[in-house]
Image (cartoon, rainbow, N blue to C red):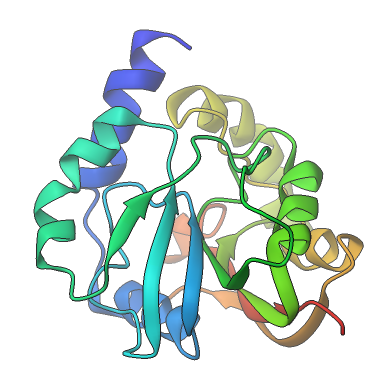
Length: 208
């Protein structure tokens, strides 16, 4: 990893402004979380303040020391205890069936081996536990998809491996989790942003 990935990208993501509409989508992704929650790609803590009172602890999976440091102020204000867990969502040290829920917001786009990461999610979830996700990915229209494929190489360089063309719903299903609810739509942003903002918002459970 070069200096851009380790020093610049985390600051760009942390400083990126999110309007009320995106914040509302994050809140919906957090709805229904409870107990011990593993958050993939905690970053600087954009979801802090949105966790329901039923959450007892957040185990933050975050590879970037810079992002973790940038989130110190948010974590200090969080009423829910937040502890830093593993650095890599592809290899979790958590015990089997030890988590009540997993939260992933704008993270599955970046993990290199997303299949491995989702297998780890399934492993650590208790039966009946759920993955709550809000992700961007491949759009349904062919014209937007062409732009996504064209822009993806640059996107991956600037944002440390972030893909634009991952079919989030299919990836989740292939992991063995069962999708209970899902919405697929563009985030409320200008049409020029469509290659980046086709969103998948949903919940998938681990079968008993």
